[in-house]
Length: 197
Image (cartoon, rainbow, N blue to C red; front, side):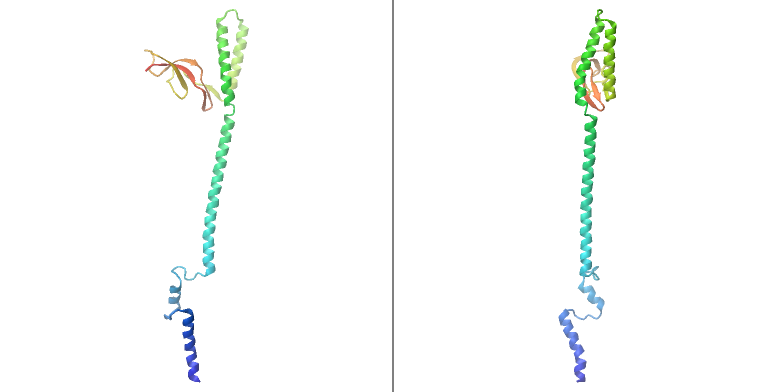
């Protein structure tokens, strides 16, 4: 009887080994090191799930930040386009107004040449022209300098060339039609005669 009692704990140890399939290597530390990969010895299933959840959360937060940045960029671009559209909303109207000013200036020039037209009539036309020019300037319209300047294909439209010993080649000799700029955009290029190269 006494022998059986002593043998029972040994039988239990052998049965535990069969159930767990872990050989006895002396210490518990060795067992732990072999059961789990290095660095994750102490992690339970819950801790592993929590770690995966944190990684997934970080990935989703990164996606949200990227989408938010895209939305912010779209808003900024839309705002810039609206500002540009507002800034240049009058451009079409101003372009159609330019021939009216041209005709008014031609009328003033012809009135100056005719002695029969009273000076009060000429003064009235000058006042109208001055008011129109002031109105255009208030809207950001400025005249493009041409005569005596170097030819610039961005704001000058050459329709004639002429040789000249007094001027350098590529210099604008004469302005045939005035050009105008609305803020940074060209409303109409100046029509010019250029010194031949």
